[in-house]
Amino acid sequence: MNSLSETAAPELTVIVPMYNEAENLSPLVARLAPVLERCVASYEIVFVDDGSSDETLLALRQANLSDPRLRAISFSRNFGKEIAIAAGLDHARGEAVVIMDADLQHPPEMIETFVERWREGYQNVYGQRVDRTADSALRRLLTLRFYKLFASFGETALPPGAGDFRLLDAQAVEALRAMPERARFSKGLYAWIGFRSIGVPFEVAERAFGESKFSYRKLTRFALDGLMSFSTLPLMVWTYVGTLISIGALAMAVYFIMQTITVGADVPGYASLIVSIMFFSGVQLMSLGILGEYVGRIFAEVKRRPLYLVAERVGVEADSSPIGRTRKSSP
Ligand code: UDP
Ligand code: MG
Image (tube, rainbow, N blue to C red; front, side):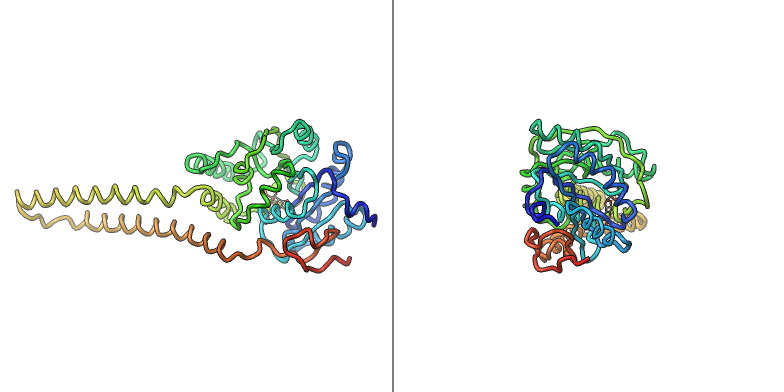
C-alpha cells in the first residue's frame, strides 16, 4: 500500500451507506470509478457498512486490497442510513463530499454535473428527483402526504424532490458534523444549514440488486423523527385546542344554568354525556402521546450515547473518528 495515498487528502470523498449490498458493490465501483477519474484530481470512496448480515464487509475488505482509495468502516450493528451518513461525514477527508446510495438508483454520471456546480461556487448541490416511479404507488402517496404535512408545520422549507444524493462542500460538511443529534433527519439538516444551494434534476433508476431496506414501519418512524425534530407545533397546538374546548365548556355551563333557572332540570342527556367523555379522553390521550414522543426523543438525546459504534475499519485511520480505539482491519 502506498503510504502517500493513505495520508494525502483527496479532492472528493464519496460516501456510500451499505446495508446488505454485497452484490451491488462491484457494479457500483465499476460505474463510479471512471466518472471520478474523469472529473476530479483525486478521490476516495468511504463505504459505511451499516451492520450488514451478508458478505458486504468481506467484499469491502477485498475492494480495499485491490484499491486503497476504497475505504470502509463497519458498524457493530445496524444503526440506520441516517447515522451511516453521519459516520461517513466524520471520516471524509475530501474538499467536497458526495453522498449516494449503493443500489445504483443514484446515477454516478450525475456527479460530473455536481462537481461542475461546485466549481462554480455552490456548496450544497442536491440531486432533485424528477419522478418517483421507482417507488410503489402506496409509498408515493404516503411520501406526498408527508411532504405536505412537513411543509405546513415544519419550520424548515425542504426543496421538492431533494434527498440524500448530493454534493457538499467542506464547509457544509463541517456544519453537519457539528450537529450531534440522534434523531437524524438529514433532508431537514441539509436544508437547515443553508449555504449556496442549487438543485440538479435527475431520474431515479430501478434498484440494481436486492430490495429496498426500508419497511413501512421504518419509514413511519423516520417521518415522525423528521416532523418532530423540525417542528414543535404538535406540542403547541394543544394549548389552542384546550383553550377552545374550555371556552366551549364554559358556554355550555352558562347555557345549562340558564336552562335550569328558566325551565328546570332536564334528566335525559346520557348519550351526549358518554360521547363527550369519550371524545375528550381521546383528545387527552392523544396529546399525552405526542408529549411522550417528544419526551422519548429528549431522553434519547440526553443519554448522550455515541451516535454509532465502529467494529472494524478498512483502510481508515482510527484517529479520524470521534470514537477511537477500535480494531484495525486485518483481512
Ligand atoms: N441503508 C443503510 N442502512 C439501513 C437501510 C438502508 O445504510 O438501515 C442504505 C442502503 O444500503 C442503500 C441506501 O441506504 O445504500 C438506500 O436504501 P434503499 O435503497 O433500501 O432505500 P430506498 O431506495 O428504497 O429509499
Ligand atoms: Mg434504493
